[in-house]
Image 1 (cartoon, helix red, strand yellow):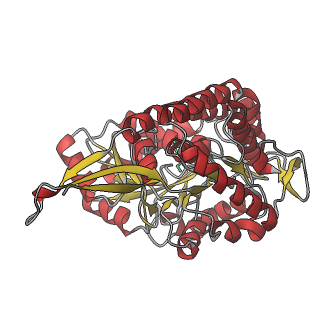
Image 2 (cartoon, helix red, strand yellow):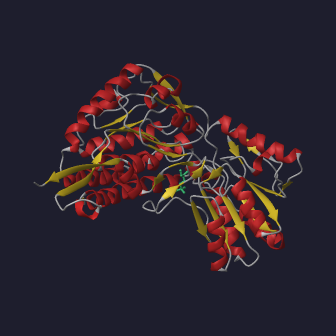
Image 3 (cartoon, rainbow, N blue to C red):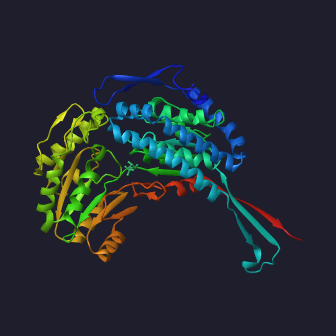
Length: 471
Ligand code: G3P
């Protein structure tokens, strides 16, 4: 069973998993039942009690070991990422290496911040003598449920696993359907490192059968979720447990007249089309001053023409999107824009799940793509006549994850950043979550709480106080 330290050896039920490129069955994983989830939860609860008493340095030592093993296994894990989610081969390896680094950094950061406590003395509050000493420190929450998305099944899992474990929690992982095999390999690396039985478990299965059951399970003490709208439903159903949620974005790229236009074009292409636009932090709408729009569109088109389109094994820039339904959704946005008069800078082309990169110019606010998140290689350009117009469009979105502004005027950049209702604003670079110790958070429908290594460790703890009363 998935929670016992081995994976995929007992297949009570099966979930068929598709190779994103060919859409043929590639792997099969266990479809866990609710009874099996209960067993995993029980084991996690027992393991956590002992783990919380394990010295912090020992917890860190095991995490460092897991990080090293993860990096040693980068090739087979990356191969799963290529097959399951069509991640370009080099990016797949980078995801695993980045994950190892994230786990090591988490171990170091945990030792620093969890090794500190606080002492308060009573006489600073009116009416008190100096006879009470309050010692407070951070203690674990219990069992953390981690639900990462398909686009980073390994990295966005370890960004939850590492902080949970270093803080003394146990961890139950519900991997995405596409990416579950890579996630199982990753969890196996933690088991090889020697983490106690039951402390970290991976529960694969059908969302319809175990999704709500997991998120509403009384044994869960914290939920860390990255994904789409499902997160809103989870937050409504979850009990009184801390939530960490990252639910996507419509990251705006505001381009001013005075920007370095080559830098702009390079970042629009990288930000809009890397991993075929399937990143929460992808540039999802370009808001560009009319005076420089023609030049930038021309430069972007020249770069788009050079993007390699094809299978992930060949390390192509644009690879098939994760599912057929995703491709259909993207196509719906494209057709809506076509009917309403957007300019197609390239011919729209699709074969199966593979969609060729497409820049849509002269997009207007009445088009769905001006507001919705395609999660694909399709990027709308809206021409603006003032910076205020750009800020207004950005802030009218339900999302508020990241955004970026391109200008050579740092004062203007800071003022625009202040005005943009986004969790992070990048100046003169495309949005990105990393480096992974930076805070990462969304406003509005983009999420709850803040991530990044330090924030996640803190979020997965609570403060415990002991007060010494002197006579
Ligand atoms: O959830 C965030 C993810 O989709 C994007 O991460 O590292 O590509 O900016 P990154």
